[in-house]
Length: 500
Image (tube, rainbow, N blue to C red):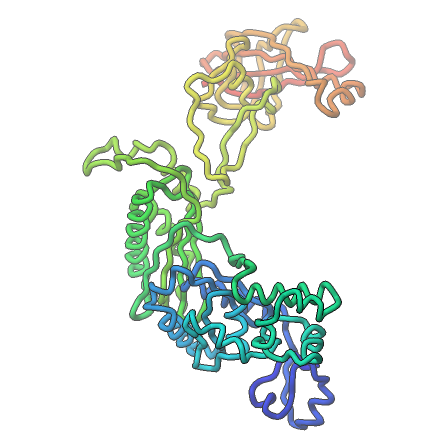
């Protein structure tokens, strides 16, 4: 089956949908290639993304079209005709055949592009003449299914101009099938804008974006970096006028071969510091392949938040660098490593040390502020390294600032059942205990799923006795004994943490 034909084949009478055997009978020397629908869709998607240089509201249309909402964008190119001319020139440079139309509604633009525009001659009727331009077009321009089109032609309605003057109730009576009549009426209403037809953009629509075009394509990293700094400054000026700061930004590099390279990143807090935003983008600039050259760069803010006036610092003021806290450091780390590579510890309501805190990926671009007065159990049993900024519970003994995960086994020697060890070996070194405090018993949380079952199976290791010990050199350890003496299984000792 023929999926598509070129102009020469069409002139010979071949049409899409014709069986290949019939086509070869018309044109014995017909040259064919296997259709690749998936590759065609991917190419159309790339082309729609490339059209983002003209408007952020772009999307593929069926299998062979692109929809662009250029409302508020045409004046940036000198008007609709100039925009269409620039688009046509760039498509021809990529050897892409095309027909372009501009109208006030998506339905009218579709009809004009498919049945009025010609190669190199876009259809851009004045707003007051759109109805006259649509009237002579066939009813197929209403985007109706073939059965409905055949029904319209049977009753003599062959052109849009034959349908538009008809009252809607007359159309409903003419077509007994309610679905057919509703479809025709809906398409007519979409044609003149009476019925809305929203366009879902290919990606998230930016809140604000700035564009920089080059007379000649650039590929030198220094030139790309200079352009990035300029765009960051322009975007920040717009953000300042709106009283907002950027949380998610994206920089697009439109190459001469039609491909678009992207840098997308987020900030831990709203920012409109041009040096900071430019620095984040420049840190990722080495991931961009400029190809044969970049002819357009577009910097867009996809998420913004209110941000009042703030002092970015005077020259030579060392305190200004830390005025915004941890956020700039997090932004730089996320730009280099990726947002999902960063995590923070959050306390959990548990007295089991390894369950008392969990790492949370900071992919939501939030910057936690240290709690000035932590809740009573916020620091109880913090189970990973460097628990700075979280207080300890007054109702529990002190916890070490560093815990091992999992706890490391030691060989310990003790006298009485509840006594701390007087000597233990850890990492091939002997430690003589000079001071000790304990025990502090921590048992399994029976209310958790599976905990009660483990106890029923005789898991004596679920009960731990913790000791704080200090060796003869002054090093302090947090040891625990897993299991109870006299149960038939000798207890085992572990070092769970080290005190500072």
